[in-house]
Image (tube, rainbow, N blue to C red):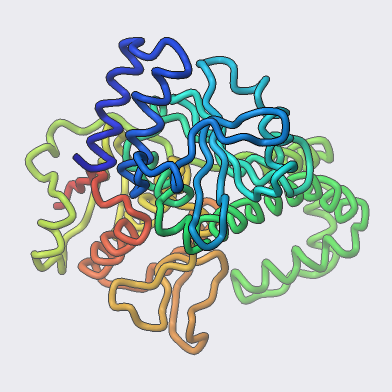
Length: 371
């Protein structure tokens, strides 16, 4: 049995209400998962139960022979997690532990107690193994708790990186409305920016009066409202009903990658139980990246991602630039990321496959209707 299969078994037991107290959660969920992540749960020098901390005890300490305690895990009954944060943080401060986990078997909360802010702000990630897809649970449990990664310090570094991304995003979300208001109040600066953008897009530079008149015709309230919600809302592609007439033309990525797609055109994308309209191979790549981001498969810390050829060109990046800036590209935005769409049909498919492998999401059921 691997972690994927173990999680399926645990989910079934959780849904059946098999775990009624902390001991049963520990025995039925926490320890089996640690075992699948490479921990010798029978070696108390590696996974120490009821570890004494100050005047209390924490359920488990994960220990490295060289570095000592790497992480603490506290187990609670469902619904009791929030009230346990303070106690766990006190344990961590007492021992100087950089990484702690709070779980009721269903939810797994990962924290960096030495960082800034409230308990929730120091939470790196929250994983609900009933709500999230199995692939996502496997990814993040491996990312933060896989034995080798914890021992080498890679897991802690990954948590630090994810925390930095989250902290930066929260600060940007708070600051963007303020920056927009300042920009909106400074009409000359706004006109200059708009003028430059128009020139970049169409090759003709509008006059100052043209831009000023356009801005003055917009409703100020509408501008302000859009500015405030833009930083926090992820634009998601609208799902559509699967066209039954296309069922016979639906093919998985492996099939498509092994056939010459020159002259063909995709019309519908199906990922798991969601369907999306696409009109060319570029929009297919953009839609896949957007799905991966909005469903928590793809995070900023995963980027940049090289193309399938592994050259100095990226398929997805956080900015419009390749590893080799001289390489040609045609960037399009997909959520907060940028996708290079300057590829032929077969390379779009290969790039998508390479991306899925990079983030550990190869088991996603993806099919494309091709005509």
